[in-house]
Length: 174
Image 1 (spheres, rainbow, N blue to C red):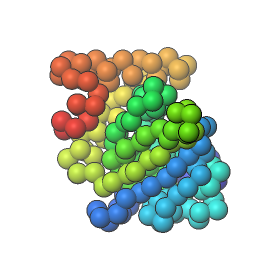
Image 2 (image 1 turned 90 degrees about the vertical axis):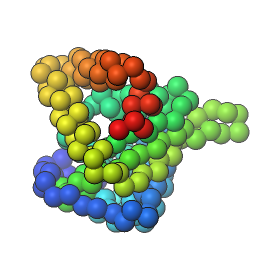
Image 3 (image 1 turned 90 degrees about the horizontal axis):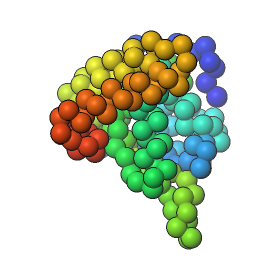
């Protein structure tokens, strides 16, 4: 597991456009599968990743409200697409366009989650870096992280609604 003292380096890493990062998690978000592209870009061994929370690659520039939206969508049994800035074991970062889906068991219950991540277009990275910076600033205004997450989430959803769109439409319209 990454030491809590890892500091972001500000160095961006890239993976080939024809490759897809794939991971699977259990219901609690612990990694049960990681493909070689994920292992390589994240800088962990497979043994270091398996069983760890997927948040092991969470970059501190990512607002909590984005992950709340992700988890709320998955718990509603829906898929979600999102732009995400992740952090490698050494503190470098990499951007992905993630498609996350619930995995259903034989009785149609959710038994885990599956994520495919592709290389995003640079214009989307720049746009979402700006949006996420604003949301993160809002979250940090509150001493209680829950209130900050809620306030930033409202800003995100109000911004999207002002464009006359739902989240799904917005993600694909940029």
